[in-house]
Length: 107
Image 1 (cartoon, rainbow, N blue to C red):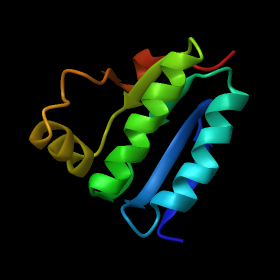
Image 2 (image 1 turned 45 degrees about the vertical axis):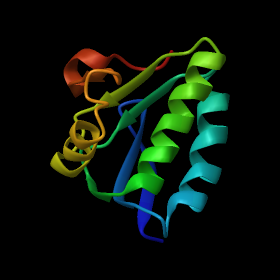
Image 3 (image 1 turned 180 degrees about the vertical axis):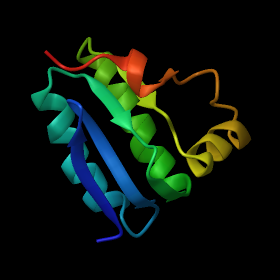
């Protein structure tokens, strides 16, 4: 598997590659995890090493799910790769970002 999903301080943490090769598996792991958290999608992406448009689509899908469920969507400390793709695609201001210290935890 090119990516790994874990929990970090009560948040979902994705490490590794967020690309076309891992997008389907990542989507199948993340969507139920967000639903189980009442729609909250707080993702720590500090260890995401690579992202392409397929990985970005998964992020946008999670954002849409969180909003539809009345939850929140926050990216915690996105890696330089993630930040660069968000910037290139004009999504830097459209997606809330936070540091680990200010993001809070799930209750």
